[in-house]
Image 1 (tube, helix red, strand yellow):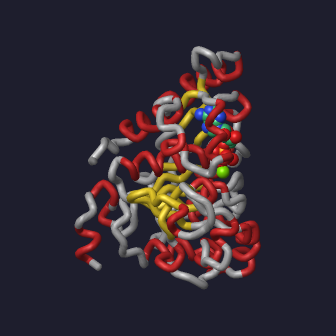
Image 2 (cartoon, rainbow, N blue to C red; image 1 turned 90 degrees about the horizontal axis):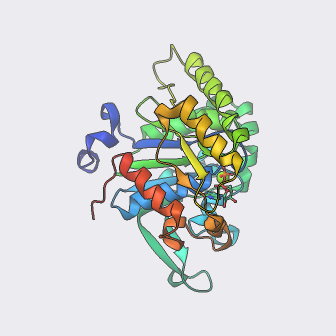
Length: 300
Ligand SMILES: Nc1ncnc2c1ncn2[C@@H]1O[C@H](COP(=O)(O)OP(=O)(O)O)[C@@H](O)[C@H]1O
Ligand SMILES: [Mg+2]
């Protein structure tokens, strides 16, 4: 156990903890590009040689789908809801992230993405808030997963639903200021207007956990991703205005802009991550800049 974790660089084990650095793609705003950013950054970093796991915490299964697992592929498999309800361990549910290269569901229909695992989602996650509400101990599920972790992942990417419910809280309260809550927001003034609510929610979580010693309780926005930003051919007023607002109000958090591409929706049509299916698109190029700016230069 000790041998495995000592080989991981200190930056991926803040304060010597035993679990990986975490990026939480969180903001209660539907269609704000959380899944696109989580999967694109996870795959970009994995292709650069950083070992990670992406967590599908949304009952819509978007992340699972983009990482090569549709409902049929997940049938009969244990998933994140089994973790929430204590019916499985992390080792039992992780699968390699992959994309389709042929027909059917045998392993040879897929190409695995090196260095990246997936925690598969579940439509049952829609009941997670109720489950946690009924049992006071149930919200410790994520804390227990972290405390018992003995693997060698460097980074975890958490893809959240558009809510601030109990399940989201059970995960978010385990972050500290070394981890990053990364709201991924479309370049649209309406979406940027959802940021204050997120910041209020994080204050609430920090206040609630202020005197607790067994829970970090300090989820912090360290970065902001603005996506769908203007290009030479996409220069409408709303995205331009959004960019100005973001620079003025949140400039200190801004990562490199992720430019607009009508092709971005292909990740859902073809169920394949953007850096794999469209490596030369503006957004794929920009997610590589984001990766570099976070300190993940190519190791390969
Ligand atoms: N850079 C981009 N340019 C244009 N459209 C994008 C871009 N990134 C994502 N999108 C589109 O935005 C929509 C919402 O993205 P998604 O990642 O599913 O958001 P969320 O997970 O927050 O619900 C999708 O239709 C997606 O194709
Ligand atoms: Mg999503």
